Length: 84
Image (cartoon, rainbow, N blue to C red; front, side):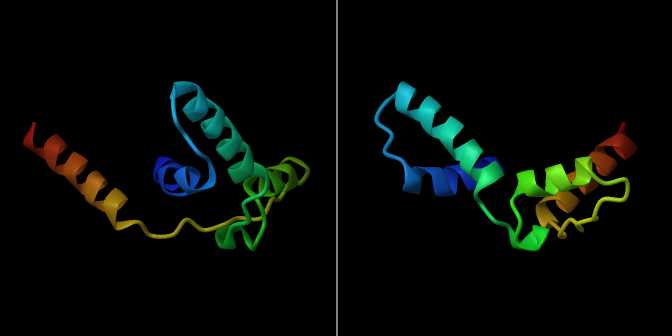
């Protein structure tokens, strides 16, 4: 999420000082959760998915896409554990 914030937020808001940054982060998080439709959620917002899940005993499952950086990180942890 932080990478998305850094990429998109700076294009959406003018940031000149610490107060602008704090305000922009709050506004962007609200935007991301409530107005940013995501293809991985069948064009729903994260909040729509959350609200549907809370109101359903069998909520939809949305697969997590493969992320090579996470796989590389997990592999490095495994290697460290084996070396210890």
